Image 1 (cartoon, rainbow, N blue to C red):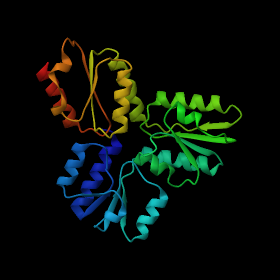
Image 2 (cartoon, rainbow, N blue to C red):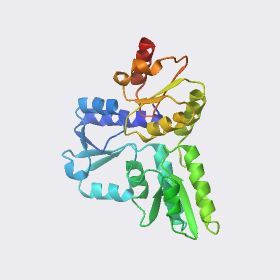
Image 3 (cartoon, rainbow, N blue to C red):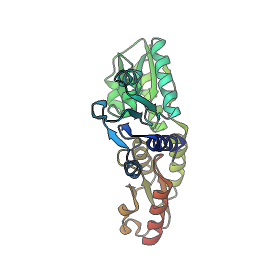
Image 4 (cartoon, rainbow, N blue to C red):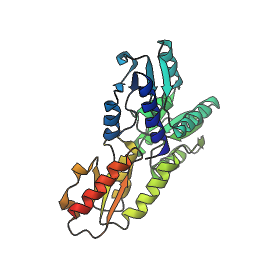
Length: 267
């Protein structure tokens, strides 16, 4: 589990112990973590209209300044659990816009982090694949940043395509993919190349976990995404000598340990 997720969970529990707390959206994209927070009596609301407590928490994925201002204008006390590395991405996007660049975000358009990154912009584009880049309009200055959990290989390929598509444009790129994501992707590539089967542990809605699955699948033909040990199937390991195990940045250690124990049991 990366430090941003750990800190967000710790902060949520501390504030819940002090009084009623509502989190605006999923604090992290992991069902085990969300169940733990629910057991602590922490409420979840997808927007401020559903908030019934005085104190609300912004998730580790962050949000826009406009959203923060609207929330505070309602008289609510806002606690920010935004990952510091997401804050870095926000500052990068703000700097690009301030310097007159048309901002292009590489990421999932409807992801909460991307909505936060673009929420203070009047004009922007979000791209995730080659077709999205081919649909872009030309701008004299293009500033590119990425959702922090995107695969760095994908980001580099899309940046290259943007430069090829707009050779006359001033294309400035700020690398906002977070270090834990890069390190995990790199380690996953090395591991998957040696494994007969790879198990990736993490929430189904976790972007960095899904990217790990895609990365491992490029180097290993048998890759399975599980949320808990209950998802592990014995038949996956038929004729397997080496099993690789990795996990998304919001997966608790105990969940990974239970999956490992289950793998050893069924093999």
